[in-house]
Image (tube, rainbow, N blue to C red):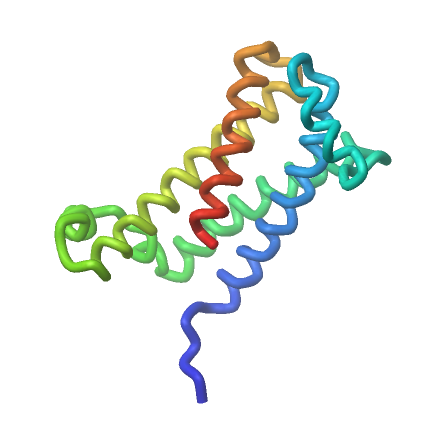
Length: 156
């Protein structure tokens, strides 16, 4: 029998996050087609959604927020926090054997992902509620989106 590499809670939360990110990405691209200087997105017009784009984007945002909170609670309650802990030993792993370097690099990627997701959730919320909504917040949201896509590709 094959040994299990991870737990079901992580698998479920991971794929919920993937689905919500996918929906948020394609709906966000459709929304971004209306921003100045983003006409190149119209090249993807045939594959981007057309109906209920704002509603789907907001629902994906709520799912992302829920998955983020659920994952935080899950890590704490299950005792799996050491899985993502960035301590002195792990940091020393950056200068150790290949396996230790890859493990530490992976945890660093997680933390960049967590911080970027937090920035996306906060900037999206501020834009939605009209608090500090402006070009700078929209730009943060735009670059955060591409950072998440880049991190996802590295993760794969």
